[in-house]
Each structure stands twice: as C-alpha cells, then as structure tokens.
Length: 281
Image 1 (cartoon, rainbow, N blue to C red):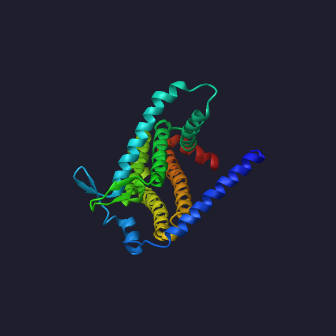
Image 2 (image 1 turned 180 degrees about the vertical axis):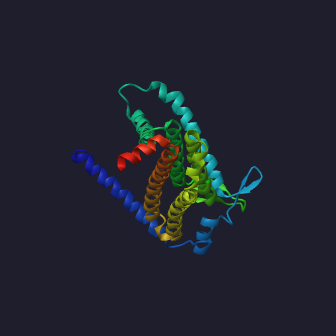
Image 3 (image 1 turned 90 degrees about the vertical axis):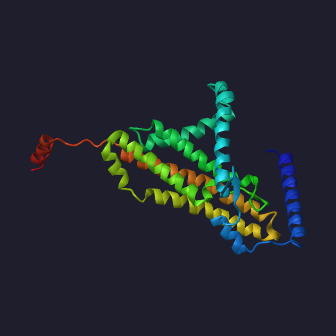
C-alpha cells in the first residue's frame, strides 16, 4: 500500500470511529432496558420467555437457527457444485483456493488421525466443522424472527442451546462407534463404550464455549452507552474465536477417537506367543 492509499485509509477509519463515538454518546442520553440484566442473562441460557412458533409448535430460537443454517449450507453446497466446481482449473483462482484449502484441511485431518480408514471420516469432519463454524458466526448477522409474544429478536447460534450441543456430541459419538463396528465388529462397540464420557465432554464443551460468548455479548449490549462501539468488537472477537476453536476441537476429537476404535488389532497366535516367551528367556 503506497503513501496516498495509506493516508486515505487512515482518514476513512478515523471518520468512522468518530461517527461511532458520537452515536454512542447521543444514544447514552436516553432510553432504557425493559428487562433487567438478570432476566436477559437467564433467557439467553434457558429460553423461557422468548419462544418461537414453528409450524404450530412452540420451540426455542436455536431450533429455527439450526434449520436456517442447515438450509444455507445445503444451498451453498449445491450452488458451488453446479456453478463453481465445473469451472475449476489447474491453476486455481482465489475462490478455488479457498474451497480447496477448506476441504483439504479436514481431509488431511482425517488421514493423519485415521490412516487406515478415513474416507467417510473426512466427509463427516468436513460437514461437522462447517456446521459449527457457519452456525456460530450466524448470530453475527442478527437475523430477526418473531416470537410468540409478538416482538422480534435476533436468532442465536444453534449450538447455544444445550439440546443442539448434546445432539452434536451424541451424533459424533455414534459416528465414532460406527467406525469401530466397521473394522472390529462387536469389539468396536466395547472400544467405543470405554470412552463413555466422550459425548458428555464434547456436548458441554460446545455448549459452554458458545454460551459464554453469548452471555458476554448480551452483558455488553445491555449497557446502552456502549451499544455502538464495544459490542461490535466484543461480539465479533468472541464469535470468530469460538467458531474456529470449537470447529477444530470437535473435529480433532472425532477424528482421533475414530482412528483409535477403527484400528484393527490382530491377536497373536499361541505359537507366536510361545516363541516370543522363549526368545525373551
């Protein structure tokens, strides 16, 4: 960046910061919160007050978010497959590099941790990692949805709900068990059940990490005088960090345990064992 462009960039950023500061000062002179911070924080965890209508059913906001994120990912995958993949070249462009890097990361993760069985594993960790990442940053867009009480609210991340986090943890645990059954039959079930606390740890790690970001953001937004500057920085920072870290942690744990339970352990024959004992003696 040359000197002229650098100067223009600094001027534009300075103007934006000044406008945000002025807006923050103006809005701090009036207004108020119709709910106490206790109610706001409790509802962010339990969703007791702000329910939503889904085809006649009263559900938590996170369920709506889960369906929307799933639809976004499926439509995006379809569009990429139809319009982008046929145009991929030997010398990749910027978009092709992004897609290949994203897919290649999860593929290498599967091959590294489960070299003997990684075809389906690569597809699963790619899907799970993409869902966690996109689902977490989804709350940054502030998609509004009407509640049963008649007012609208921003949809949270799908995994901020304990039910969504448990579903992801249990499903990943079931996938790990499928790898053990495929290669080790009944023994694979036993190998997986030894790690009985794994679905609990994965579920609550997701839930607590994402919920902490939501609570911090809610706490900052509650103070009106900070409603223009600080929440943007805090919200984006916490959300992006959690999106990357939690996608990495769950996919890493899944691939590691999948590789362990799906590895074939051959039994030594009795004759082999006697030979080893004699050689040791």
